[in-house]
Amino acid sequence: MIGAGETLAPDWRIAGVGALMTTRAGGVSAGPYASMNVGVAVGDDPAAVAANRARLAETLGAAPVYLRQVHGARVVRISAADAVAGAPLHDADAAVTSEAGVACVVQAADCLPVLLAARNGRAVGAAHAGWRGLAAGVAGAAVEAVCAAAQCRSGEVDAWLGACIGPDAFEVGPDVVRAFGVEPGRQDPAQRRFAAKGGAKWLADLPALTRDRLRAAGVERVTGGDWCTVGDASRFFSFRRDGVTGRMAAAVWIRSR
Image 1 (cartoon, rainbow, N blue to C red):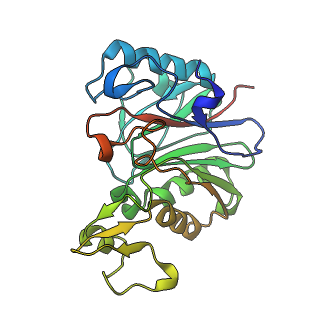
Image 2 (image 1 turned 90 degrees about the vertical axis):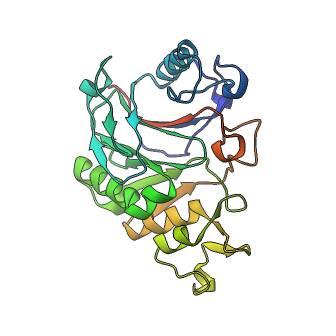
């Protein structure tokens, strides 16, 4: 199992719902993947990845369902059938379930994991929010899917943001600024999400942009988003910092009753 001090977790008080995000600690991988890498397509030893994924499943007490993440806004509803060995992966960036014992999982190494839970405990979801998927609407689509599965309003869904590239490290160009409907140099200072750096570069605040979209979708309680993957090499994988690196997992599930 992975130790409690080797993960991050929301402070939700939702009966029957579990949630966590792994760090780079607690696994068996070596080198740039040390030690809790769950990514199968990053060059790590497949046996080590399988062992790490088994540790995650044991820690969750639920069957993890992974996605083939494509930086889009597609949401899939998953079930126990998706957790069976050999089941095809969904090309999607968010998953929702209303089944106990099935964990929605997204992977990240700078992009922002978003975990969602209906307060009635009937449905949960996880979204992978890189800037492309976020601009395309993955956060709002995931909230809508959780509400449909739980038969609740968006104001009755809690959201938690995991570790991601922080606002002092996420350098972007004008294409990213415009993707969020902001014309470079013409934004409202009170709503600043992009800080000019010079040389046609800006520093983007990914957690704040995600909070904006979650609140626009009607989510009232959004917590987390306080950890920078780039700035803490001992604790987090970061693709932007290291290039060759592992992937962390963020998972949310309904506990078996």
